Amino acid sequence: MSITSDLLFAYLREVFYGRNNASIDLDKIDGDFVTFSKGLMFFAQCFCQCNDFSSALARGDLSVMPPPPENELAAPLKSLHASLKHLTWQSKQVALGDYKQRVDFMGEFADAFNTMIEQLSDRQEKLENEISVSQNRAKALEQSNLLLSNLTRHIPQQIFVVATEDQEILLLNETARIEICRDPDYVTKVMDLLPEVESVRGSHYTEMQLDREGEDLYLAVNSYYIEWDKTDAVALVLSDVSAEKKQRMELEDQAYRDALTRAYNRFYGMITLSDWVSTNKKFALVFVDLDSLKYVNDAHGHNEGDEYIIRVSDHLRVLSPDAVVCRLGGDEFMLLIPGIDEDGARRSMVEISEAIEHDEHLNGKDYSYSISFGIIAVDKDNSLPSSTILSIADERMFEHKRARKKERRDMHA
Image (cartoon, rainbow, N blue to C red; front, side, top):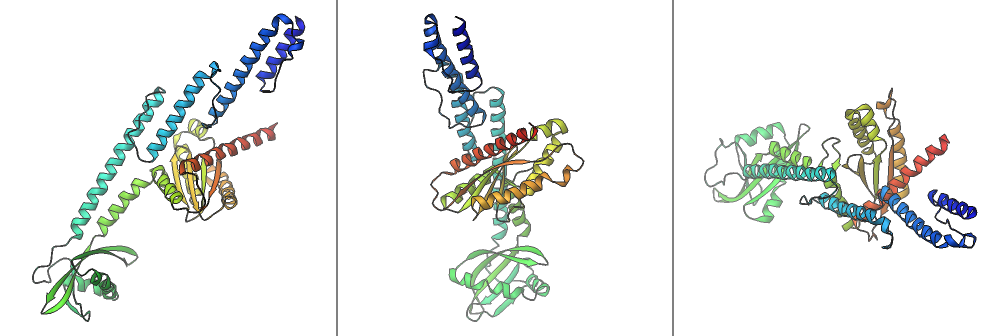
């Protein structure tokens, strides 16, 4: 009996300390306890399966296979696994703009998630309405009154009447003359529009962008073919729509930018990722996670946490002028770097990481900045969907984070 109890206790200790190869030599077990030992081994097997499964879930690995049906201990974990996979799918749908998704499980998290989706939907609708209003206003301004009769010098738009045969200027109104006085090359820029206008041969609208004293000038250009003093001519009516154009561009920018960092938001990032994948573009995707943001928020306040996020975003945007830097939410960023392989992206990220760790804002602070990142390179032969590419980079980021934590533990051991 003493030998049997010692063997069973040793077996349990091996199981609890994570030794999946733990076993019982049934030949050494007292006959009355053989059946009990077999049952204990089955229970330990179920326990190890649950432990492995829960560890994978804790890492965020939802691709892990659940324990077999005969493992009744795993039923709650299987339910959680299914819920998390469905929540992940819903989150991806939201990232693609499907704001009809709702969560009806997980208690307070469901309430917070649903509230967030409603706010995103309301904000998106509001921005779209503002953009639509701005576009309609600009279009109304750009569509000048049709020139039906005599042109006068009192019309506020710039008026150019040009002979179609030899491009002789037949008429300029006062507004056009003032603009020419400001810029001697202005006539040449306007005349450059004629080939485009003549290719249409009818009432035509286009838009012209000029540089006026270091600032962009946007002009709506309407053209009309007319007869001027028995000469075939084209009337160009130019309206300054710079204010409306800039307002529209600002509204469109708001729809694609993260309010805190001014980096691109998740919506724009997922659109760009899908576009690059569908067009077989060569690029590297880097999934970035801020280390210890929760500690900074809890110990030093959310203002310092926001500063942490902003400064990391600023460092990431230094990486490449062609890189698309997106804040996915919270402490996560995604970088899309065109024309680079995995080694090149890793070298760049190591430099960025060192710059972040030595950020000047940390002078005199008792906490540090650092990031974990995962990289996946995509080439023209890629067959993976964008969601899988992002998931792989996410998992590699967690591997990087775990490796760095192990490094620190070993250093202090």
